[in-house]
Length: 294
Image (cartoon, rainbow, N blue to C red; front, side, top):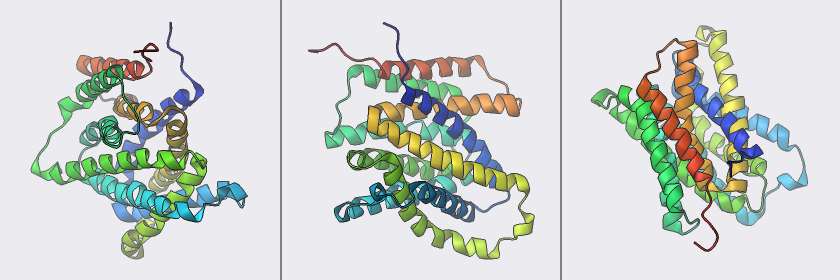
């Protein structure tokens, strides 16, 4: 029977296009913006957009008992994650960053297994393995772990675990609220925590030195990499589960490779093509369901 791609999975493929290009967008913008001020502005813009979408609808309100969870999600999934991600990508290469973030499905699977929240079949684990091999073949040949990038690499690894914890922990909230409500309020908490870190840099920033292209990159990243992509991600977590959603993050390095080839004329090797095939095979395996009774 041929594999069917649902609407949410098409949206996840769109998400990989956005996040794959976002690495280069942010890396370019950080040539003019300091990391923390850049992200403070990015998160503030994203939060404003989310609350514009929420409006004053009664369904946007949270129960008092859910606020501790939302605050925790904002702290881990937006504040700590963004600190680690922005400082990490500023200190290491795009190749290293994408390779490390490619381990997200493993972190998600481990957290779910430890918490007994979702059982994973042997086929699913095999799919994760295929995808990780593919990630290494796509970007691993160009990565270098040295003293100059070690701090950035460690920060990116911390970001992986923050994102995995956020993905798994948000599942219970998504049973009671829409992805928009969960993301908007947790983003707001993260933004309130993050702005004090970016404020000192914003106060001394020479605004005239920031080019139009850097501003476009900031707006693009806020609208698409945060607002659109986060909504897609948590809609997918709600509908198909954390494990199947997270495996799509392994496709981001493939997109980054293609974008670099088209825009920057970087060559694509045979090994990288093999890696891309392995990643797509891994994603396909996670869609296979074991027969009933097994």
